[in-house]
Image (cartoon, rainbow, N blue to C red; front, side, top):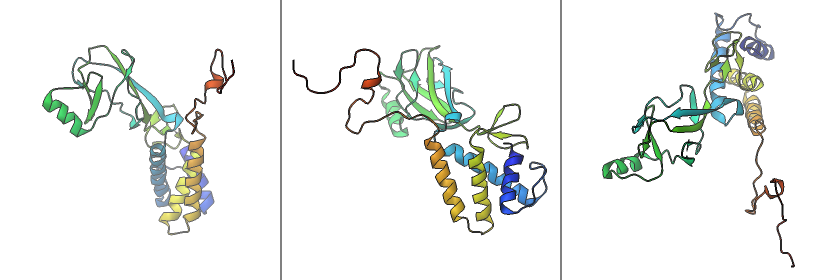
Length: 234
């Protein structure tokens, strides 16, 4: 479904004339819907851990504290606790707070394990890594739509662009924002949009099983000899 199709579907629902173009349209209503479409796309990207937006940033370290330019240009937001030193096969602890980092800098003492801190667009690492180590972390990309040629984008640029995230959700989001802007009854549309976002996000990826009893829910599915839990007479 293209941007033109999404906007056309919304127009049909609210009784507005269906446009032939969106990006180059001079119709104030169409331009307003384009603005809503960009807002909904960014809002959805920030809502949760969407499978289609997950990426890994893998980089080679420099022999210095500041790992310049290691933050991806399409960073939407970080996936917590996903940073690893793949060369040493151990996690990167952080990001630490400004207070903790400044205290370490003042005393010139750092933990033995790798720790990291964010300053601007740079990643700062201590102890200073050797050149050539492989570090990696997971993040959510801000490229929630794409061109007809498949190039990722963080906003709609052409009528032929398509959504990376659910175009159905984008349609519902634009509809809700249109009704709200016009002072019309938008409560039901807003509720439906919110419910559908939560539902699609919950079903977006397979989920692991967690036991509230503290047991290992995977014991029966691991390879090898499986002995059921319990007391056994010998």
